[in-house]
Image: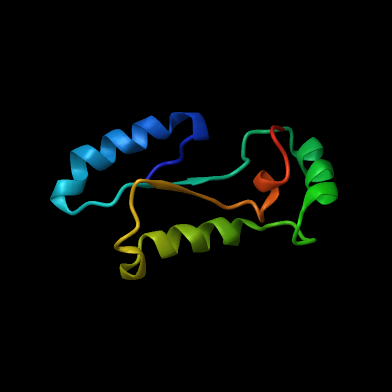
Length: 92
């Protein structure tokens, strides 16, 4: 598993087509790391539809689930771990 920007979903599709036949699931987890942290927190505070900020554990738990047997049928997709913020805005 590796982290991809949403514009790079074609890469995950390529890996699905290459490795899926061998029983390997390909997934990515998208976070907002790499942005100006102060600016990000201010904007997220104002926009969070669930009324709280996420923690590193939220992403870690999502990655753990995706690597478990419970997620064995999930492949070729990106799980966005952002508390729904990406559904409320167009771009940062």
